[in-house]
Image (cartoon, rainbow, N blue to C red; front, side, top):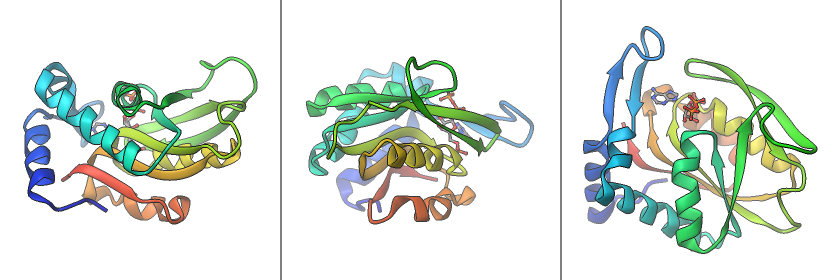
Length: 186
Ligand SMILES: O=P(O)(O)OC[C@H]1O[C@H](OP(=O)(O)OP(=O)(O)O)[C@H](O)[C@@H]1O
Ligand SMILES: Nc1ncnc2[nH]cnc12
């Protein structure tokens, strides 16, 4: 679900203009969406963080969850701007204490992600933030972890959705009634 307003369109145009296509990275056949130029542009970065924080506020969440590593760069400032806490979902072996774990496949590989078992108090509502939705493998695994950890999913927002990979369909069963939004869809 993406709001097709003039403001959303002009935000999408600004953000898209700062994302660079890198063909055949990290492997042949993949066109990598490089967000480094966007992060380096203060105005574009601020506009993106503001849009993510607005979603957190509108959904009334108590935490923003970020997915390692690029998701952290978006989710942590969005949580701060929205006045709520941040929770990391990390790659295997990086979080101390008891964790929930999940393996998954993504567009160019496979991995295991984890969340600390005590990350959420009862009744917490969370927004999941990541940079790119490709096949949906990463976000699906994250949503499974959040369910195990007892968090209530309020929504998922990504900077860029690669529509041709149809991650959205893969996510449908994991989302329940929660919205999936993209600031940009290509
Ligand atoms: O929809 P999918 O096919 O699962 O792909 C999307 C994921 O791939 C990238 O993460 P990556 O594991 O490359 O990690 P990084 O953020 O550490 O670069 C990206 O940041 C998303 O999390
Ligand atoms: N094409 C892509 N560009 C950037 N990040 C990605 N994660 C998965 N697929 C990706």
